[in-house]
Image 1 (tube, helix red, strand yellow):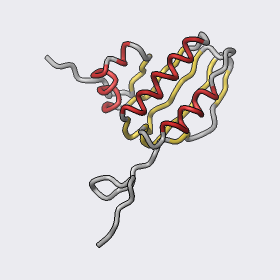
Image 2 (cartoon, rainbow, N blue to C red; image 1 turned 180 degrees about the vertical axis):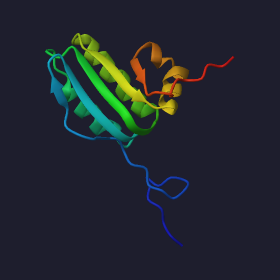
Image 3 (cartoon, one colour; image 1 turned 120 degrees about the horizontal axis):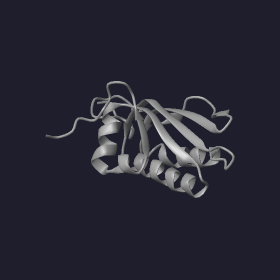
Image 4 (cartoon, rainbow, N blue to C red; image 1 turned 90 degrees about the horizontal axis):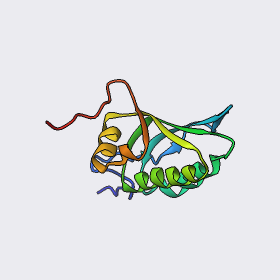
Length: 130
């Protein structure tokens, strides 16, 4: 009988907590941070700390590249909302880029697409209920 780790999924695969794919890329007026993995409760504390650390009043725009984010739960959403609130207090716009269909739909269902600036990946538009 084998034992599965706490991070194992029902299929027996281990989920990968969200990580920063590369250091923040600073450009004049904006910063880009690429994430991959799962935006979940396991990743939330370290992710929150890292993202708040890249906010700079000199940058007017923080772009989060979510092209390689596999999934997001309520803890991941809380990180995004908290980041948005802190950024807004500093006069910084947070833009979510390349959000996949699942994340785009989650943001729509929770109403966070009205709070967060979302640039979806091509073909990832949320389907509206008729």
